[in-house]
Length: 186
Image (cartoon, rainbow, N blue to C red; front, side, top):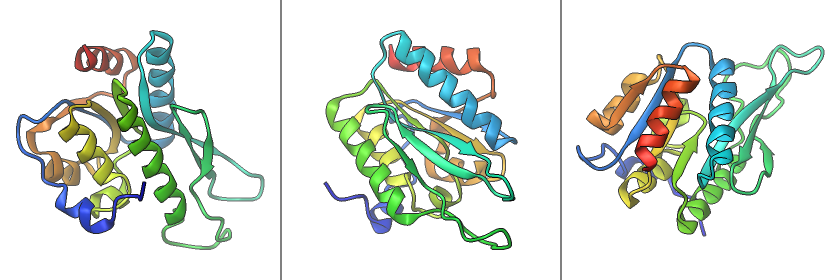
């Protein structure tokens, strides 16, 4: 199954009002939000919820300013490195486009298997620009699968432009996110 193209990702938004639940965990600290979504996913899995999507972890390396970023597939447990080590002084995007194509495939497979909820680590710069996992998010919502994702305050306007009134703003609090997910999944 091919990964969604950037063109199809742009066609995917904005979504129509009333499509399906979208929970947006709004944060200022990305590392804390990554950990929080991982905790939420673990709790929901322990309750027997079938989850698809990915959660992020970051690993610091001695002598490096930037950490290595990994995404873990919530269906298989497989992890993939999504950052490229461009050196300590490099500026600009460090995301590995090939890794994102792989992650999109994981998400499409999860949706085909009929998961209860899609978890997306974040609606980041790539999604704000119509790339990344944006088409996957739209596909899930339009197919009837609720989505919970992280979004920084910086990218919140782009998520709102994409999702309209669909995105429920969630505080970065474990119990609030769990409550929203349980209600969305039913």
